Length: 296
Image 1 (tube, rainbow, N blue to C red):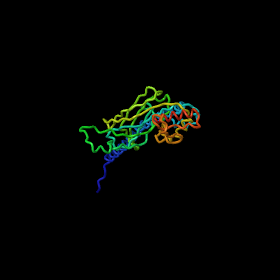
Image 2 (spheres, helix red, strand yellow):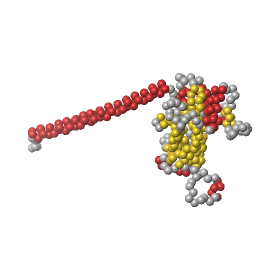
Image 3 (cartoon, rainbow, N blue to C red):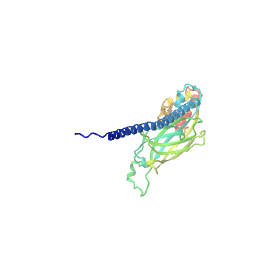
Image 4 (cartoon, rainbow, N blue to C red):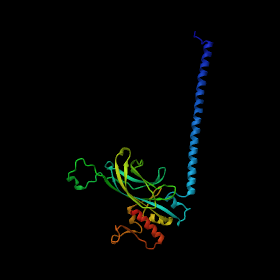
C-alpha cells in the first residue's frame, strides 16, 4: 500500500511554500520601491534642465539675435539697423608632416569656451610632400627634419559682435567627417576688437598628434554696417551660411560686382577691386569693409 504523508509533514511543507511566496512578493515590492527614487531623481533633473533651457531661450529672445543668420532672419530687426561684424581670415598654413595625406578643415571659434560661435572652412587635402620635383636629385643633409607641408584654407569667417561674446579666437584643425576629430589647436586672446590683427599662430597637436606643431596665418578686422547692406554683400560674395555665421572663399571675389583689375599700378597688389557704380555711400562703405576683411 502507498505511504501517506503524515499530517505534521504536510503542514510543514505548506508553511515552507507560503514563506517562499511571501519572500518573492517582498522582493518584488522592494524592487518597485527601489525604482521609485531613481525615477523621481531622473524626472527632477530633466525638469531642471528643461527649465534652464527655456530660461536661456527667453533671455536670448529679449537680448536679441546672437548670430548673423538669426539677425538676418529676424523680422524684429529693421533693414537700416546698424551692427558690428568681425571678419576672421584663415589663409596660408604650414602643417606638421604627421598630417600628410589627411583631409582637414579649419574651425574658427569666436568667444570663450562654453560661450562661443563657430565657422568651418572648406576641406583641404594635406600634400604628402613639400619637396619640389627636382629635389630628389639633390642630396639631403643627414639629420634634417622633415619640411612642413603648405596648404591654403582661403576662408573668411564672419561673426556678429555683441557684449555676450568675449573677444577671443580659438582655432582648431579637425579631420573631415562626421566625428570631426581635433588634431591641433590654439587659443588667441584679443585685447581690443577695434584694432586690426594679423599674425602667424602656432598650433599644438593633440591626441595622437601630441608633440607636432603647425602654423596658420590669420587676420582679424571689425567693421560696422547695416543689415540690408550686409545681406546684399553676402549674396554678391557667394557667402556660405553656417549655424553661427557665414564663410567666404576667395572665389567670392569674382562674383557679383567684385571684379579683378591688374592694370592700375597704383594698387599695391592689383587684386580684387570694388565696383561702386550706382550705389549709395553707405552701401559702398559696407562693400569696401567686407572686401577688405576678406583680402587681409
